[in-house]
Image 1 (cartoon, rainbow, N blue to C red):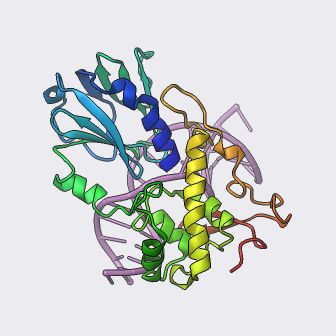
Image 2: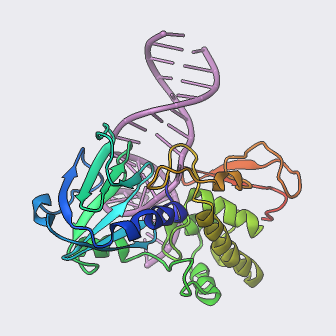
Length: 271
DNA sequence: ATTCTCACCTGCGGGC
DNA sequence: TGCCCGCAGGTGAGAA
């Protein structure tokens, strides 16, 4: 489910409220992608200092160490003073004196991992190869263009890989490429300066707008208060195969790239 | 090194 | 109604 906008909306929904909280208990349900990596009782009494985001990971800084939380494909977090009894798909819960943080994740591709810091081996394995933050000043056109030049893959695949720029998943890759009028199958290294510039701007715009709209709620995503997102209503190609393009009227097409669906307008997005 | 495919897991909708 | 198939917002591991 969650790409950068959904993760950022999630983060904003509880970061301030949980900052300074004291951990009373940490409980895990069925296994997630990786084991927690620490005896949960060890964390009792620690403070939650702040909540950051790196790509699609949430970094919850504790007095000692940090929790890495990833929402996978179907994860969502809730945070409230109290929550109803956990359901069968609730697999992580952090009880604090400020409220309860709970992960709901039916498919369990998500993860909650404790590491000592960002230099811990597991943290380096998961975060070390991540590209730049698209909404930060580090995401510059020159560096982006240089990175694209090194890849013979289709541009959509390069965006999804996250080695150049993080946070762009299956929805926003299709949307950004549509706005930049670039065919998703175009070879990254072959994109000219004008297209690279348009794509750079489109990525920032699409992700920024999506954050403002509360993310996309296709099936079950919701923010930490359970609120739905609305970007899906603004999507111009994602999930719209067979419908007319809002710009030119041509029929939106669907193709498979790396076993993922890609949506594009065959007229607006030139090969 | 780069690129591609598979695997992980559950639920849902469509076709028979 | 029930069963089987394909599909779903991610990404590390292993193979080629």
